[in-house]
Length: 426
Image (cartoon, rainbow, N blue to C red; front, side, top):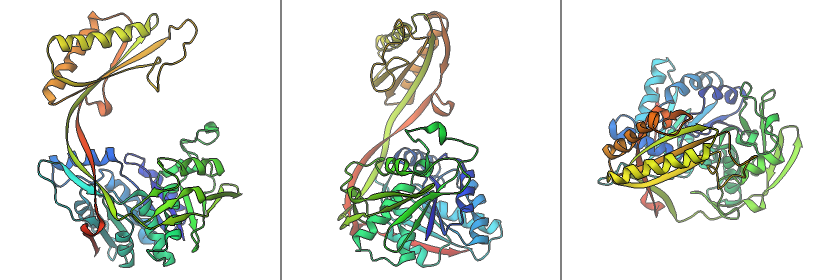
């Protein structure tokens, strides 16, 4: 069976679905979620109970559904976020509006109550719910928080008829899912080697896994696309976000990555084999989302001469004025990009006076009003600060303030989780 990655993060271009479907695979899997994105979606749902799923779902369905109908490729996505029921309803309505009668759209979610005074909670499901929806004939499956690799494991189990206690094969499927879950990374994206020979944003392809019944797989990509599938790109992704390679804990199995063998068998073709597995954990991981206060930030770029000194001075000055005015700031963060912004002090260049420095100040407060009061102080620098200010940058998406979400992990017995599976024909 052949499965492709169609997405590795919320915000990635929906156009990457085209090379994924054009690869002629059996399944395309889209992974929208990370802890930061589910936090943002939890805030969306608090503002509007009809929201909480990926805002780009409409654009992705517009691209994907014609392929699903015309070619029979099946789509699996966790774009349901923290409101998979609403996402499923939206997908059904979109398919009906597009005239795709007979299409079967599945929903997989954990039925959980929202804790009092919390934005919500989620649990990391395994592959069994998605596999049940596939067995029920779903052409498209909308899920919430299913573990990333499990999204890929489910169709592999269904296609090859694996047992849910065949730990070695389940571990092999988790390895495949882990390699493909981050979009193009396994095929040259974010490659730490000669990236200049792999990055071409006009020809991005998506990685494909050809998975055999014994669990071995060949990782490849579409012909003619940019990137590279090699021993190095695959091993980098294999170790990405892994705490203990000998015990990668997934909901369905504990996989041992140290037994995996990688072999280049041709251009852009790497064979992956040898995974070993141990019985799945007795408990599942979950997250509770709670209000975490407010944050503000500013980025102040100063030019030579004395760029670093100017940056240090304005950060100290802003904090001093805030403290003098007794603004209740809970936490400060200072960074000087060009001097110490990434991982510690930077080696001096030339005479130690860099040509420009961006001084970033961020703060956390309990309420939006205090965060705004601190932000107002930044205006003092426009005409009363050091010379050479090149601009005052704002935070992400142009919003100077952002509401924070506190994440608290918890564990619960898997038997306590009720997994809901529903398949609806359009």
